[in-house]
Image (cartoon, rainbow over all chains, first blue to last red; front, top):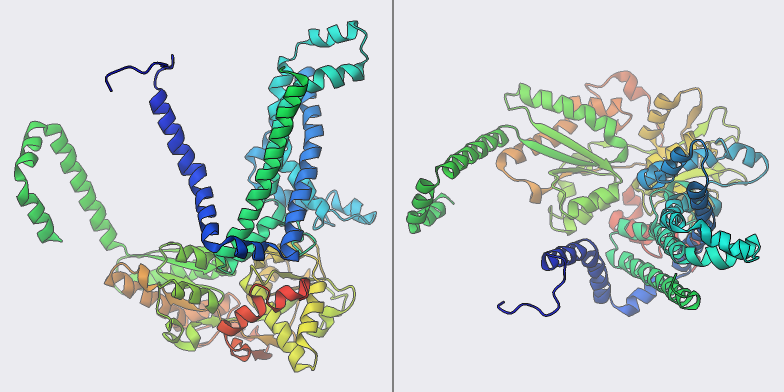
Length: 278
Length: 352
């Protein structure tokens, strides 16, 4: 230990903080995922494929990822809009509204699921008039979509909010004085600045929706091939003490999620390179 | 154990003495800790504890059983025991015990769930022969709950497959109760000259919502107003009537149903001492004693011994033809055949 390192960090305690970080990350994140992959490896790729390659599993995976993507897209648009309103405009009740955005984080998902089901069931507050029009929400794919939008909403808003706060109004004004129309300013000046944060929020909302179980289970009808989500299939397999099949579906979800997040990251890198560093 | 500790002390007496004499504060702290440990140990030895891991609809039953049993046990001259109960889906409760939940007693919905705990080596494989009536101190059956007035005219299983009738049942893959629903429907079809697989398939195509557990289905039917008929445990149906108002729902008893036997057992591997074993044995015996049986009747279970029960509680149960799980070859055969991966139930939704 005699000689000092050549490139010492100016901050003290690097070794300690790094050690704590690695330990925590291993205990909380890497070990569980490692255990999942380990179990999958001992089960064998052939067996995993056999479990996943069934119409019912494909239907559930397709349903989960399709609805999660739709919910995240919805949240991308309306989350940015919400953040913009909260940062740029002053109106009575703004702080209250701002606090309400966090509710989906704080509320136990089961409570959210039950509340949404009670509202959208055919005898519920929204459900009854809609049922009179012949529209069913609860116990259909629409119900699942609403639950996923609910749990994902804060992610986009909260990641975009500080970035909007940083944008100088002068930039917009400069764009306007140079003769740009509003839409053009929005598209070429504002959007590029927001894109990285918005994409991060989108990825978070997407990941959250894919894994969501607690709230969806109450509002989905859970009918195989129609409203059965992939996490429910995992629970069903566990209920049969079939840990290997549960692992297989878990790994399939992990791989698809990984691929999607990777794609989002690549888009972020690409957009940064195209627009230049903002 | 004590000789081992004595050895360890005699091997290195020096450092211990030095530390103790040089650091009086630590010595006092240690003495205090030892006294506290002693006090805790004594307390633990006095109040025996028991954890009963049970399934969903037995909450009300075991709340009362635990109180009555504790009173009886204390009256017999023992220290007041600490009895706790945990409730949840039968399958997930079994998994919790397999994964290490320290339950001394399990009272689950299906023998096959306790079989799984036995397979994990926590209790002997022949557990079900240890107590009378297949280790089931009380039984129940499956009945229909319909909305007041019974607009669809539902009288028997055959009415459930009519066009436009919506049936609510939990998912047999995740709910023990729903497996009994399914098997009862199967038995009716067999006795009435219908192809059981086609009949059960038609029945489940009339199900708009498959909840994961029995309580969830009761909520969907009673609170959300979905469906025309709920397939339910008899005790759950009576409970729903009591809690939600007798003027809203009616119970319809079909011509054929199934004798559901929710069994009980001692988890041998989790018994810590002879005193605890005695307590666990007495607890399960109490379920079979007239007093325990009367409580089962009171909570809408069909028990065996009505000698101490309120005659009104016993008279609530109409006679009906009941098949048993033995007619399906026992759980070890019925479970994989009907509810296993790719079994008959799965084929309703994804034909082979």
